[in-house]
Image 1: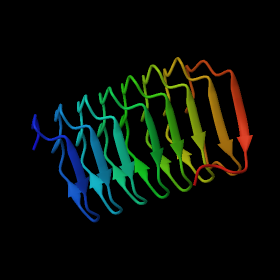
Image 2 (image 1 turned 30 degrees about the horizontal axis):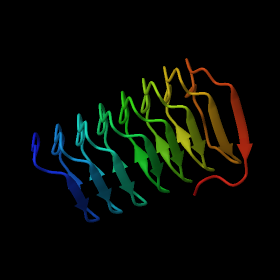
Image 3 (image 1 turned 135 degrees about the horizontal axis):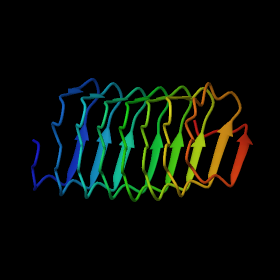
Length: 171
């Protein structure tokens, strides 16, 4: 399905394993729903430049570089129990807000270079890889729920103005 220019909407049922680059460069794809139990290969949706909305169910595994260069994404809300691979959302240049539910793991450099990212909300039990938000220069605010598992220099080279603890999270 890579390079399919007619595909605009995609709903994938649960318990599916997607191979590497299977939907890469589907330039007309605008909406995507990933049901629980899905595992994406590396670069699965790489370069889907029209993708504006992604709905994630619990227990989805996102492979390395899976959404790299999806330049139309603006807001992502991740479900509980997910894992996000290394560089998974690198250079998603329109991304402004990211919300993480509880029990989630974020790979190294997962959001590196998301130049318009301004806000990140972490629920409890979230684990971040090294430099997960490296070089997100517009990142001004971070909200941490009680009990964040680890941060591992996740916010290096960001322009933070406020960090807020919160007991509510997004889970």
